[in-house]
Length: 130
Image (cartoon, rainbow, N blue to C red; front, side, top):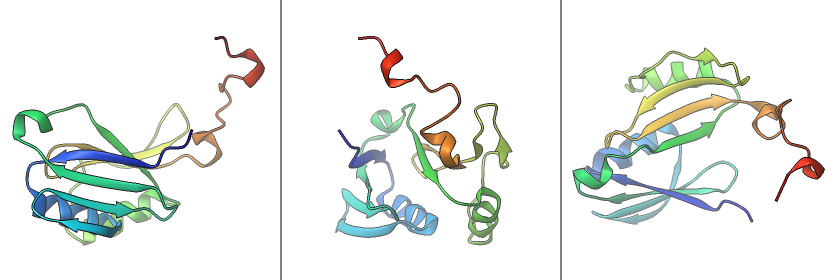
């Protein structure tokens, strides 16, 4: 199984469209005022869909990995985006900074490198229980 796409709700289509374009995602589908799809550098897709405010209030966190968190945060700030947290080294060996999209979905800009898939505490395949 492989992850292909994540879709999150938005409450302001145009504001969310600008936000994800500013982050650097390449838009590949434009179906206003309800839906847009973007592509990441690796080819995974990400989309927004218009939802009412009650449905948009969720515990969604979107993770976008970058090579350099500090440089990315600095570049995005120069483009007018405001971050909720500063870049921080976490106990789980990721460097992260958080920002919220126009619908309030949390977005984590992070770098994990090999620790994304292979942290020291990863369960060995033969140790996994059914």
